[in-house]
Image (cartoon, rainbow, N blue to C red; front, side):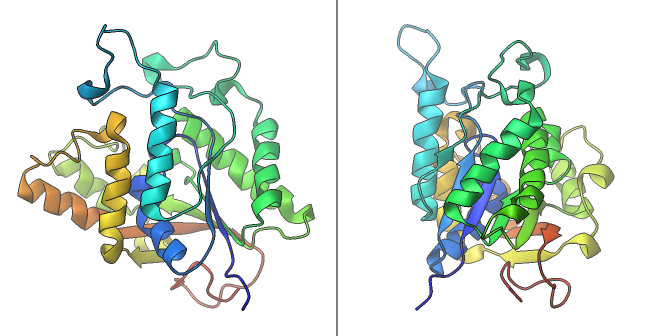
Length: 274
């Protein structure tokens, strides 16, 4: 029996895989597909949200080491392959943007990042490539770099013997973005225009109900203790937990590119028609 086609997800930091795509990655892994995750950085500039991980003497912990282990545990929870790191530094954002770090992703020539992603494509030969939308989810500089580099790599990989057939972007609708803002909860959409950072329902190429994979998705989120401890605490009010899990039960994607026909719109599956 032929091996089911492979998926490669390309993101910037540990934890980028969990919220927008955790259920999708777990679903395809369970269906027998090889699912790989390429992570550009080790999240060095991530803020420590779990005080229990702080060092006893008060000195800052090694965030890169902590988040590397967290990502490995997240991949285990989702049932996907161990992470592949591209070797760049986390750039941070806003007042923490590392403009003077030559190894920061933000400061790396785009074509260099594209070439590195293309190397991974050649290595794992994915049929489907998955990455950030054109706004980088919520405008993070590293997300924007990866969107551009992964999109470029999808097209330039056409010279390879087995290039990816489809490119998908993570996405959420204008309505969902607005609901996230109105929820009263802290959100990555805070202060952003939903009509810019969201998409219309008709733009979605694929909507997946991942309700049955919520245990794995929540386990992946919990693996990122340094970043999400307050969000996954057992003391979270039941109403807030139910709202959050309702959002997490549906994952949506737009189509960024294709090497072949799309049988109908929207798609029912990432591989439909391939």
